[in-house]
Length: 260
Image (tube, rainbow, N blue to C red; front, side, top):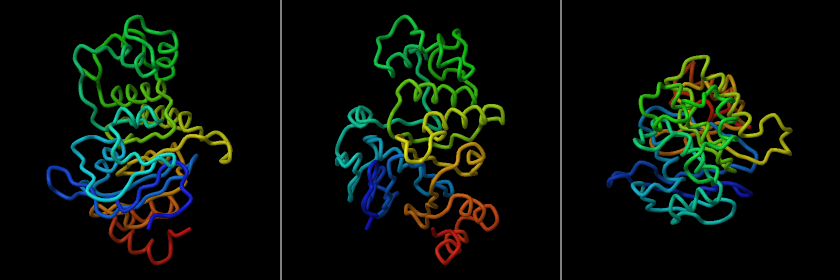
């Protein structure tokens, strides 16, 4: 069973199918308010599927289990209702949206109408080294890897959700951009505050763990074959993955090293 006492996200015995294929099986995960968790795992193990399911994308069919958000069962809610309740996500490969300007997208995320770019949007853009002229470009059209990541963070800054999900924020990004993105993730999640004052929570997917140089999560999980195979102290889990690989890390952490 999933651990008790969860205040922000509580996933219980979740099984998910995509196009008739079972990707996630009997998965349990609990994230407390103010906590940030990091999720490791090899490609194809179900990490992105988990985020898409939490956000309620229709192609990801929940066959069993429940998803509770702020103690409310959201398993059957559409994506827009989940976003209204305080979820936000930075996608690894967001689509290009022709005909929609980035500035308009950010205006919408802030609850404002399309049209003139709000001064607050301009200020947020400056924080991410996004000039005003960049806000007039179609969303993600011709963007570099670093520009896509900064665009995604900009939209989250405007949205200010209570629970943030980041899908591979450290992939395809150069060192200069990843440091900037890491700093803004820390700000978004309120990590500069003492633990008892942190309000926002997060779940970060990473294959390399590189993002952990810039943001320190509270707990780490390793996902294998659609399940959470082990959990533990982030630095210990990351070290064993680097030294021994995912499957050996699961064995070692399960035995002694990474348990808190």
